[in-house]
Structures are given as structure tokens and as C-alpha cells.
Image (spheres, rainbow, N blue to C red):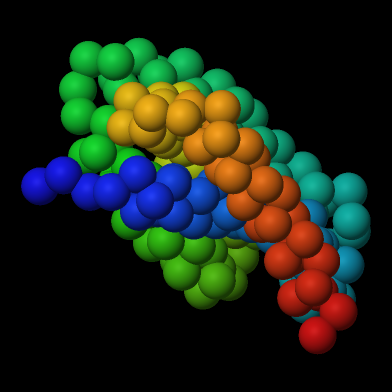
Length: 151
């Protein structure tokens, strides 16, 4: 089934918003977790290192796989995987569980940039405009997080 370019841009942009929102969520709640988990800021920040590394390093195999397999299926894996790992991370009771959850978010979120953006470009005729909207919505993920923090 062929979807419209507007729907394609909207879907890709929603994915970009979520990618930035979810990868920046943990640094935003670090201060509250210091009290909750009775760990220092440094100890909590260390828990995020594997997830941050996997967010970057996972882009290499994700891009390679996206060139050889279904970009659409990989985007489904991105959405379901980041969603599931975010829910599981929310239930974390120990620092190890938190680190594993954040690593899971990082690895699934690493799919978006190489696969989502190439998926978007391959399905739109005005790629500059499509990438511009997509970039804007990536920033909205960050600003949405700031708004949530205040409310």
C-alpha cells in the first residue's frame, strides 16, 4: 500500500521526536533519582553510559541492515523496541535494571537516524523539505522534554 508523502513525513517526524525525547529523558530525571535510589549523581550518570554508547554505535549495524533488509520492518522494530524498553525501564528497581533498560533504549533508538532518515528520503520527492520538517520534529522532542519537566 502506497502512503502519501505527507503521511510519510508525519510518521518519520513522530519517530524523530520520540528518538530525541527518549534518549534525553534519563538525564532529565537524574536529580530526582538521586533521592529515590540513594545514589550519587555520578553513579546515576554512569548508568547511562552504555545506553549512550549503544545509541551511537548501534547506528552502524542498523544502517548496514537497513541497506540490506526492510527499512519499514526496522522502523517497526525501532518503535516497538524503544516503547517496550521505556516501559521496562520505568519499572526498574535496581541500578542494574536501570542500566539494562537504558542500554535497551539506546540500542533500539540507534535504528532511527540511519534507517528512518533514509526511509524518509526514499519515499519523498522534495527531500530537502522532508528532512527540514524531520529535523524540526527532532528538536521538538527536546523542547517537549523541557516542557514536561516544568509541568
